[in-house]
Length: 79
Image (tube, rainbow, N blue to C red; front, side):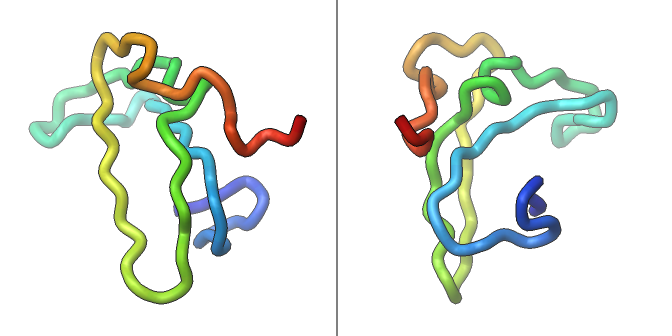
């Protein structure tokens, strides 16, 4: 994993997860897929990265997401 601010790896704390696809994104069978843009624009959820232990997350993405399948605003944004 990498972040724009911290480079390779990730710091401890809360992070907004945004997921996007590119020309090389494929499903488990090797078929090219496109991830809906709302997951990169709005975010999927906020995760907490803890020190030590395994930080593993699974995200249930839908090909036709409805409101509630993604975040409509960034809860980590400062007012």
